[in-house]
Length: 124
Image 1 (cartoon, rainbow, N blue to C red):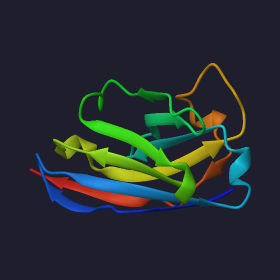
Image 2 (image 1 turned 180 degrees about the vertical axis):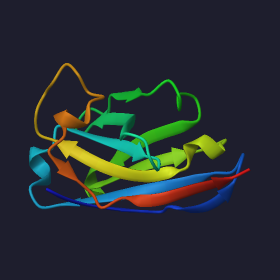
Image 3 (image 1 turned 45 degrees about the horizontal axis):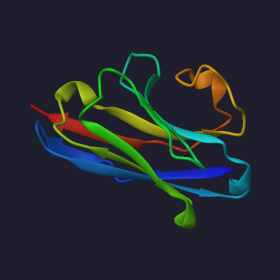
Image 4 (image 1 turned 90 degrees about the vertical axis):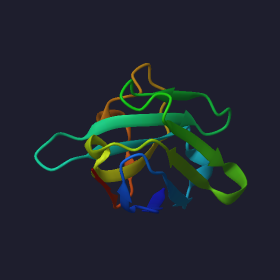
């Protein structure tokens, strides 16, 4: 599976952005997709995940209630709607996917395909 993320940019605190991630290749093998982010000098951090067929979601506590993950299976596209953005949301956002069913869904080790990342900068 190949993943291509886009939609990042510069936004003021309190603003909104929508990220998109287009999947290509063996997309019928995907079981779960997710968004991670990495700020400068920090480790990659789980943001949200969704099961591709059923659409079950799970969020990191830091974004719950502000971010919404969704997918359009017909378009092979995953989205991350980000509202009430904070400066601490500033990071490179990566989309990922996995064909495996695992109990742990928030570890980057679970995911076997990654997009190139898109920069999100939130100014105060």
